[in-house]
Length: 464
Image (cartoon, rainbow, N blue to C red; front, side):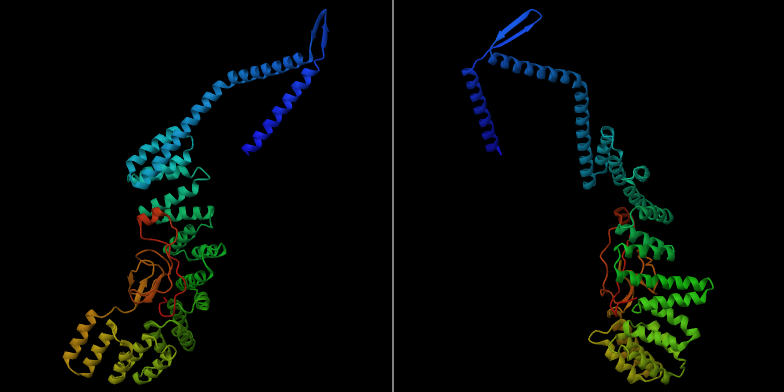
């Protein structure tokens, strides 16, 4: 580009020189008369005079513009300098926030507020600085002030959700989350947080609407949505039963089972409702669920649904169910318990040996101790098995996939972290397919273990 410009200027210079030479060889003359005045000159002098006049006029115009615009330029330059200093203070304040220096961040925030006329940016810095300093009221005021700016309202709501969770104000946090969801229903952390909050307070229908929006907007995958919807319909079924709507309760339980028969809670709910009206249907439901996810509660329901009370006949019923998933430990433990109840010590021991493998669990060891005691083989063997149970690996139990908390019974929401649908029947250290933490408000994570961990359908031996 530089070479091209040089060539162009060189061409202009040659043309100008040729023009000057041409005029010098042909001087010519110009005569002008005006009101008795006469001017005689050459063409070259006239052209030079016109050129000088043009240059003087342009120079005068530039001087005039400079004089007239000087005050505005000075003010603009002062304002630009003020903005530069304000942004510098803002940058230093954000760096102080990142370093965790609340005092320094607040100092820069105050200076940025004085220098900049952009309250949205300075409010965010002020809120973060107040949080670092433990000034909860100041942070809340800053986040609330951000709601007046359309572009910053979403960030303000995010901060207020965290503040409300810190204060233990679940209702206020839910209200802020609902407003954030209306503003940006496609944002993952909003969908996940609102869903869990609605589930925590038992707003099952509202949670289902949030879930369906998340599925439509691809925030929640179809598989996750299917499982979560099934668990929500289980809770809506319980709600309908409490309200005296048994037909609705049964219909919701059927819909849930059609969506996720691999979830133990779903199978159990439908079987419980069918047990009073049609035990055979309850047995078929349990059989389908047992093939996917065995559980002791399903075994008890199945034996009750069979109507058999004689211990030996109950073994046959248990064998029929165990045959649907013969390799699972729950099948062996169910048959061992049934054999123990019937007084078949050898049969019980055989099933326990199959369940034990190389490292029997606590439950297997205790059942072995019970077999030895009821068979009266000696207290030394009983004590040996009980001692072994103390150091044996833990059994399957209801454990939260989000935080690992242990629960005695299945529940829709983890009491420890507040996540919905994360309880699974598993041994410690074994997981189904679980989610990584979602993008939730950092303020909420800092104040509470409650996160948003939408579960995916788990494998057959770790489902809830």
